[in-house]
Image (tube, rainbow, N blue to C red; front, side, top):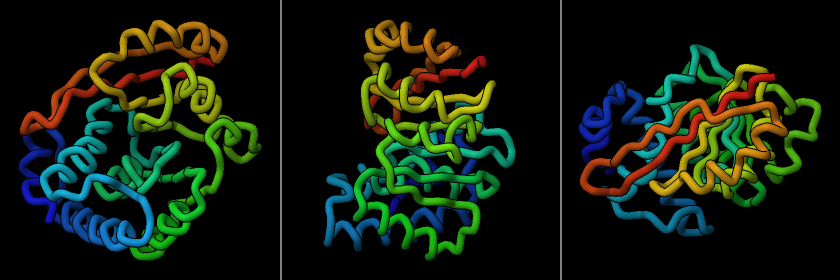
Length: 218
């Protein structure tokens, strides 16, 4: 199960402890079991899941924005990607998982209970409403979002969750330049800017990705 996870991570330059890899396999077993009862993922093949769920999620760490003990919010997390793999690889991170589907939220709560996490919160909410909650606005160091919505919407939903100097990591496909251009007005409105776009290719020809790194300046 998740054969080659450690090797594929090493190929990408991602350090993954053996204990973290084993916990990811345990988490994947939970996903597959729950997937028989609800729609969590269409990707169930071993190598495809390894690359497109786990390695893909962990590429966020290549951005260098996850300081020790950072407070991270995963908006539109679905089955828990990328948030849960990030937490398993970096146990020091505080994590909030946000999804609008109650069945998925209940599944995520069972994962949190399985691992005994005290610093992981699961929130049932729509992304566009989250920043209007006092406990969420300007509360996080990093927001991650994986192909949830066009970049212009992610900027409006996710940047207000960040403290000044915090980062949004928007996980996108290879052709992101038009989205980046279309988001410029929203970025100015949120006093934010695109710090960089990191382009990468997953191993085994599993696809090209862009990590759009946005910083909130004020």
